[in-house]
Amino acid sequence: MAIALVLVTLGVRAQVTSVPDHGPQTTSPAASPTATPTATSTSTQTALPAASPGSPTSTGTPTDSPTATVSPTSTPTRGTPTDTPTVTMTPTKTPALARSAIALLPTAYSNRLNRTDGLNLDLLFSYYIGSIAEKDSGAAVEWLNPLRTWMITADIKYGWLGENGNQPAIASGFIDTLLLQGGNPGATGSSTGTLKFTTQSLGSVYTAVSKTVGKNAHVHLGYMRGDLAGTAHKKGFLSHVLPNGNHADLLPLFAQGLASIQNESAPNILYVGWDFKFLGTAWRFEVLKPFPLSKHPVLINTKIDKLLSFNLAYERWQGGYALLGYFNFRFTIIPSEPKKKTMGL
Image 1 (cartoon, rainbow, N blue to C red):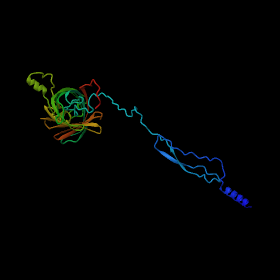
Image 2: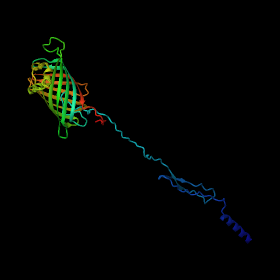
Image 3: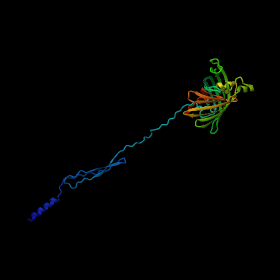
């Protein structure tokens, strides 16, 4: 009996302490980090499979598994130029702003590239249409009186001192003008409307001084001396080939109010001028005063480039004035186009 109780007790203990065998257990290998070429990584949690019922030793354990993320990067390719500088070679005949003259009168500059001195020859064609408005003392304003005055001029000079810093440019030259004048049908005393052309040659020597005072701005001062034929006659040579008139003779021809002094001739002209660039074009003004001359006329010529070569002039004398219209064309013969290509200025 005692032996049976001992056997029963041992069997119960063995049942309590025994652990059923469910077969071999498998464990998940731990994730090992893998080296990647980028520096950024993201971690993900991976849970082990849940333990089967009745297995007290199997639990879910989270592990960190770094995952590599490849990000594309922009790398410049060597040997591929992005900006390619280009240089355009443009032949230039004369400076962008013609500087050999103001309106009708010369400056001390030549049209040479990059220099202001040297030889310069211009041809000039001018046509004074007539007075737009004219008033003399004691008379009413007269409108649109035709003049019909043509001028063909050769202007040759040599700049013997170029502009350099505070030093102005100085040039001397000779102007010869062939004057073609038609009759004025509207003038007092005219009995016919036909045109009768008369020719006259006007000549002067001159010296001009020019100075730059700002960007694309210049001032000019000049003196002209005529009476070349008379001076040559006194010296006894070349009097028959030199011009027989003076440029001051033009002023009495431009207005009916100066008809009384057309027989006078003044050998001297003093003039000043200035030019500047405004709104993309050149504006030029010149004032000339002949002396000695009765009624003391003064002529102001204006010139605006790119305005179809039409210009306005204003003449003032003692007791009257006239507003004139004229066309003006100037061409540079010397200096000529350079042989080598030069970068445009």
